[in-house]
Amino acid sequence: MSRVGRVERVTKETSVLVEVGLDGTGRVEVATGVGFYDHMLAQLGKHGLFDLTVKTEGDLHIDSHHTIEDTALALGAAFREALGDKSGIRRFGSASCPLDESLAQVTVDLSGRPYLVHSEPEGMAPMIGPEYDTTMTRHILESFVAQAAICLHVHVPYGRNAHHIVEAQFKALARALREASELDPRATGVPSTKGVL
Image (cartoon, rainbow, N blue to C red; front, side, top):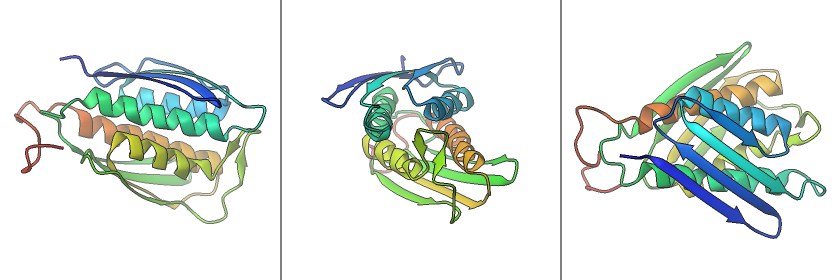
């Protein structure tokens, strides 16, 4: 069974190609034009063991918002496509990842129902590098959740450095998604009493 999702999204603001293979080795090829975002998506592929290709061209002469948002939307849609009917998956996953002084805790349910709970420490630096507005992290997760149709809880109880706070979230998200999307050798069918996710 090939669990690969491929999505192309083209608007007047961006052109995005995303391909994700759930049963990969963490091979990553990412180019969005936003350096820190590329770094975060690389964490997602590497620590989730997803083979991930992302190629985005966006209106960066305006700012990075559309590029980041549309990439997250396409990523969520590709992830949902790769899951197929979700037969045999574990469905639930959770992970805690520290990065120096920061800790991120992520729990996911591949439920078919989009819902996000997200909290970060107050008073984060507003920017990481010249292009990444730190308020975009929540927006990335909102966009991903909406298209992937998953329930996601992300909590950072403490941290000081904005880079560490955001990166810990992406690493924990990768590990939680990896666990939830893995095939369970003991399971048959869709992991829901409803018979569908």
